[in-house]
Structures are given as C-alpha cells and as structure tokens.
Length: 147
Image 1 (cartoon, rainbow, N blue to C red):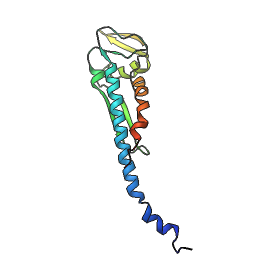
Image 2: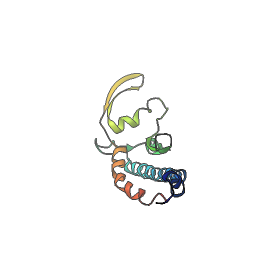
Image 3: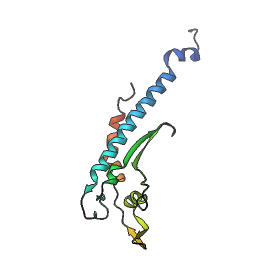
Image 4: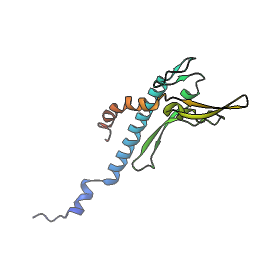
C-alpha cells in the first residue's frame, strides 16, 4: 500500500485556481465573441428604406438610430458570466420605448402637434432572430476554448 492520502496529492495534480481562471477567461472570450456576432447579425438585418417593414420581418431604419445603438456587454458578476445584447434605451422624448415596441409589438401614445394618439405597433423582431441564427455556432466557439 502506498503511503499517500488523497488530499495531499490533489494539490499537486489539480491547480483549482489556475483552472478556474482559464475557464473564466475562456468564458469571457467566447461570450463576448458570441455577443459581437449576434449584434452584427441584428444590425445587418435592419434595412435602410423609407417605407415601414411588413410585420414579422426586421424593422426598417429611417434615421439610423436603431442600428447605431445596438450594443453587447459581458457581465462577469452574473454567476459564471453572461452577455447582454440589445439596443440601448434612447433618452429623447418618445423614442425610448421604440426598440421594445419594434421587437415585441404593443401599444403606445404618440404626441404629435400637441394631440395624443393611441397607436398599435405590430412586432418586427430583429434581436430574437439574430440570436437564433447565431446560436448553432456557439458549441463550435466553446470547442478547445479552455487551454
């Protein structure tokens, strides 16, 4: 019988801190890359044209703000890390609620020339389809990412 116990040999074979730091670095790299791909896919699905897009297809860009303000960010504090991808909330009056209305549809009150008008928006999703389009590539990104 060999005179070694399991706990004393565990430290020589498995450096937990080094492995966890490598996994955290790989997670940050893979999720950031995935966020960039989804962001780019969402931006490229938004076409610049004067007419509104048909319901169910990605929205049209008339001014360019929606395309310009799609961001992604890696959040290390959320458990093992996560990535948040989507449009920034616009602070200009009346435009802050536009991105969620375009993605999911809904009702809002517009004020034009001092008059209020209740308007219904049909969904024109762009973030969900971009995420679903890029999701099959995620396992390949994880492959051999921890070195």
